[in-house]
Amino acid sequence: MEIETLEEFDDHLGSEAPLRGLRLQDLDLTGYADRLAARGDLTGLVVLGGDVPLAEAEVLLRGGAILFPGVAEAPVDPWRGLYLPSDLYAGLEDGYAATPDAKAYAWFVDARLRTDAYCTLVRAIHDDSVTDDLDEFVQGRSVVGIMGGHALQRDSPSYAGAAGLGHALAEEGFLVATGGGPGAMEAANLGALCRSADAVGEAVARIAPVPSFRPDVSAWAAGALAARQALVGDEPAATTDTLGPT
Image (cartoon, rainbow, N blue to C red; front, side):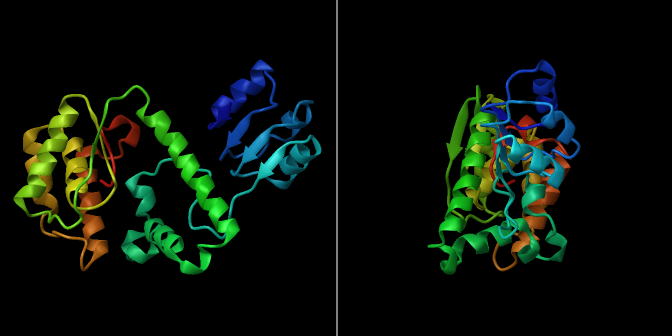
């Protein structure tokens, strides 16, 4: 059983249900040393990442729990799940190269790390964490996948058409999922975020002045983030009808 929030963990501790076999994923366990020390069933408890101060770590290890710490060398948190655009593009004001998205991509394509067993393990854990969160996100929802070319310009009729398609699918209750790239995939996600046909046209017009991610990824991403903010504000991803780049 996976525990992904402190509320879930507190409920579990309060119910006196066994801890053996639990997976605590990316939790801040600061202040839990005494409550954990009072338990006699820590063997088999697995703690995946998160914040585990020394006092809590000592209690867990003495009790037979297994701890997987965070990975300081990686540009991503391997234990986290899905990302919001604001997560991937944090620091964009300092240029795209400063963002987690750029750093993660550079880390992924670094040829020196491709045969590094440790990096391979971290990447596998990260991808599994995202997949696990993705499975929960789409549970019970009707999903339509859209794949398209990266080269499609934001100011082209085809881009507007893809945005209209994304909007129409979302209006019918579908979750629009894409490969996360620019072009047609971005357009479909953008359309799915819009709550009216007029909003689709306005959103496309808003980002059209920067038609491509070439030559300036920073300007391209900034336009997309501004368009998303105008449409949904700080709305959590789980309440939207789109899964992809925008």
